[in-house]
Length: 215
Image (cartoon, rainbow, N blue to C red):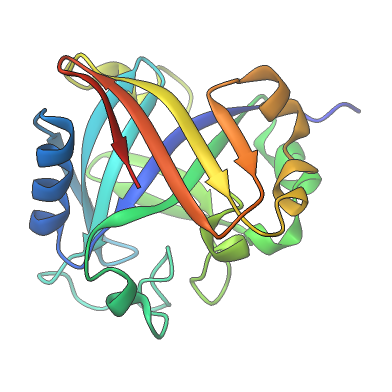
């Protein structure tokens, strides 16, 4: 059976504090972020910026008001060295979804993504692949897989900000480990590029003020 089609879902900027992360990205883009919420199961919180009817940018950080979760936080927030790496907010990882059977898509992707974990923000609940140690596959250069509930994509309910993704560039010395399992997505979505080089993520966004770059 052919695995479901994979689609870009959102890109995450991580920060040591949500306020610092949002301020840095708003200054870089010249636009205001919309609201977000708390992730009770992971002890984090976020704010969101619509990039289209089915795509958004997220700033995420540990929520200092939340009790510690009963497991390692996602996105490697509890890993040694993460706080130092986030001395300045930075593009951190990216997330894809399946147009169809999420379990079939998960089975076709590398095991390093980890199992699906149920998480929530307010009344919205979904599943995301999270390794047992809370880390990220290939340090976040391999994307996580998300499974939203049926219905419109959450971005469709966000306020229009006049922004759109121009390009997401994923750079890693072992680029083929990213290209191989995601070949169909990369062939279909020219906004996403994987290149060989020192590891980093670069996000180019069309804004009302012209193209802007993060990372």
